[in-house]
Image 1 (tube, rainbow, N blue to C red):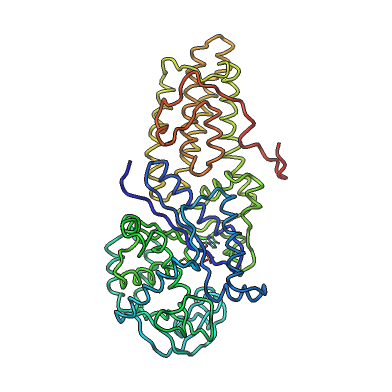
Image 2 (spheres, helix red, strand yellow):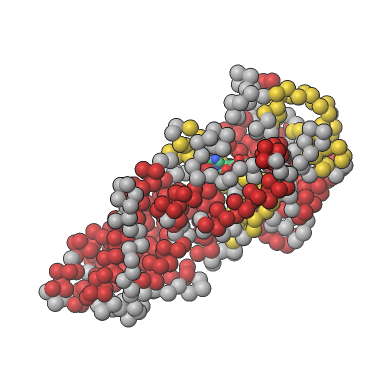
Length: 514
Ligand code: ME8
């Protein structure tokens, strides 16, 4: 058991609209990583939540004719219910409107103000309303927001600024000295490229006359805090900053921030400089994944090509949907979503491979071994090699997960299941049973079941419900620490094997269950 805790975060999502496939992806990824860490016996803290202040939320509230708080209260439930239905189980769910968070934001602002890391100035800039970000003239692309391409508005006002620019050299050095701080490499290079230009100071306030919905600056009630300055601090509020020093010191430096590449600069430039100014350590790693693309475009609320995750999960089952998300997105790259690719993945990996293997083993054990796990006899080279492959997969999968190469790791597990299917074809226990070779049949079925049980444990963080059913039907009961079962030979001869329904029923092309 490793002594280092595992702390993983997702972005906190805006409550202007319902969750979509992109939000579900990051949150499933965090949930799966947390479940793997628990499987390996690590203390784990998985944080997600909602970003409830700012213009986006205020405007959504106006359009619905409700107060911003009501908007947030309604929408937060949509996120929480969706996560529950997708079997996402965070240890904490933070809302930026909570008093615990407001206290931290105001304390940090006060500290930076007293340290002269914040000053007041007049400001004229170009403001992107949907992104809530100011840009300078030279940032604009064809006169539009460089981030989302939408038109910007010129605004002039008195505001407060965080002296971000003074941390530029330190930040470049830090990123260069810590190759794993920003991953993948392409994103790290992007941030270093961004930092080649002079880093300006950051406007961190909005006058109440323009925006009311935010945390008031502790030193000037005429202003509320810029939503990003507020939101990023959620990552230190939840593990106990200024509330539980011991817990905070243990968890915070281990933080792994999972984000989409759309919020790279806020996380890799604003956030580290804020922490540095406040005298706090940096998170362990910021990992920016790619986008889910739908019909050649980034899926987003504002583009209107949103895929609703729950409808899809109903189609193939929650576990299969989780599996698809992780199997089909390659480390840091964009992935193209289509219902056809979801169904194809389901059919190939789950119905025809894993599900079929489970069905064959439980059926043959019922038929040839009186529904009990058989006692294996002397292994032939076939069994020895399958055992060696299964045992090698355990550390190999862990390594892939720790590198966040989940799609590769999952591919290896499913490849082992395919190998077991081939082993059954090759050794044909049905023919041996007819020939009265009960000893060989027992060895083959035990070996196949044990390899499949290891596959199921290794896939359990991804498909918690289906995999637990699978190993129970194979005759294995997990203890309080299922990770203890990650070894060859944990399946006990004599245990009852049940012949259940297919775990992943085959789907007809039209989508009807076969
Ligand atoms: O940016 N593909 O919230 P948000 C993959 N509140 N992931 C996607 C995606 C897509 N097409 N679309 C969205 C915010 N995401 C801020 C964050 S954190 C301190 C504040 C995911 O509701 C991805 O994780 O716009 C992205 O970074 C996040 O949703 C943005 O969610």
